[in-house]
Image (cartoon, rainbow, N blue to C red; front, side):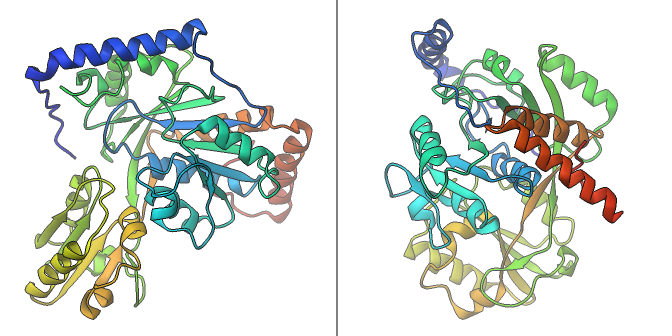
Length: 388
């Protein structure tokens, strides 16, 4: 588990008060209707947080994609953080992190059949997805990191809260890491406490439920990370984490908000871990590539490099990586799993919303009913996605 200590820079609190005044005023303008929120005929699900730093948005977006994309045409819309392009861009299989950002690039590579687009103006992005010739068959839109983008009124707002840094103990920027006051959680329809330890007990659920002080209409869930098999980036075959032995030297190459959980996961297999840590969304340069080569060459055998899917989106294709590195670099995919039997209830709520609010509601319901009927006829065991 990560360090639960919330570090507050008390000397910056006066600046946090000024920042909070501006954010509260902006939110008040939306609530009064001075600033307008726009609704759309297409079901829109927003996934985001009110803190700076990783809360696991991308794995949760990918979970929603898996949940819905077998049944309808799904689009993911992001702002494309740190991309070099401008305006609306629809991803293709050739798109790079420079074109659309690392996280949209990761999603497009994993789900090539799903529309992935980027646009800082989310209203414009939704308009393009639902009207452009290539994408007008979009039936549901997942907004990535759009909790503060209130110009879109999503049908379902999902707020992610890091178990290791609960918002109830945090402060506004720059003294803390909150993007807006804690009261911002009240806009959420669903709250998910992410990165929970596997051993979360029902009593912990009760304690956290009371501490978060949600409204009755808000649904609370808990998720944890599940790590899959190591996948080669350039050559070789995938391998289980258990192939890492206590003698293995692992270079953990990351440019994410917090690599702590990855270090803890790999520490189950070896204590010989050399972190190569860069800032979140770091753009690798020639000197970084040379540093990777040098660090890896300095370690004795057996050895390998482990990186994340998000880093792979920026790292893949970079010139200068040595042959030795290319032969031994792997990415470690991560997925989420619901705790306390929350998965089926969560799935039903998301599917129910999309089915009820689809542009062609009758057709959407017929598609889901057909899928259920086919599953019954084939007498196959249902997957973790349960349709009722």
